[in-house]
Image 1 (cartoon, rainbow, N blue to C red):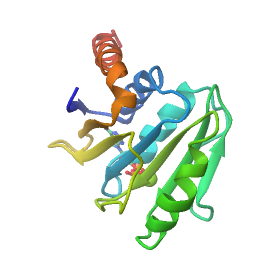
Image 2: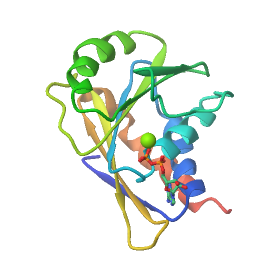
Image 3: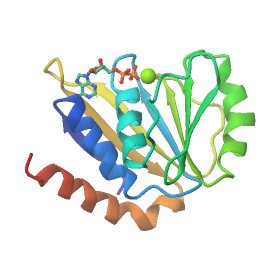
Amino acid sequence: MSELRLTTTSVEETQAIAAAFAAVVQAGDLVLLAGDLGAGKTAFTKGLATALGVTEPVTSPTFTLAQVYKGRLTLNHLDVYRLEQMAEVVDLAIPELLEGNSVTVVEWGDVVAPALPANFMEIEFTFGEGFDDRVLTFRATGTAWTARSRALVEVFQRSQSAPC
Ligand code: ADP
Ligand code: MG
């Protein structure tokens, strides 16, 4: 899988994609959500949280750097909305967060991180033609995702062909 592009037409569909994605995430994963405000990054995170068994409501981590939710895996949710936070997050927060039995999700805009770990999944959110259309582009970096690429494609195929 070099790149996988999925189109969604509703929040529910975006969250169904997130739930399918949850089936392949593992402890130690770093998932970067890129895209403009309102593109659906938090909506995706909520779908991922639910699928990981998180029962508390997921809110945007405005006042804290990372919000931590207990589920089947712990979900660390970061929102890097200020550019100056970037170095802090990449150098300090991410390495520490990746150590636990957890998956770390970082929302940010169209900014490039100075340095990232060897393995991560980037999901880029862009607006489609219709008001509720969004395009999600999955790009894996590093060998941690290589073995799971096929499984990922399969869960997405199942989720998209499942009857509503
Ligand atoms: P971000 O975190 O990227 O700033 P949010 O997830 O907070 O974006 O907001 C996305 C907004 O777009 C929500 O108001 C949601 O209801 C709306 N929306 C409409 N269609 C979609 C879709 N297909 N996927 C995700 N969100 C959608
Ligand atoms: Mg958000």
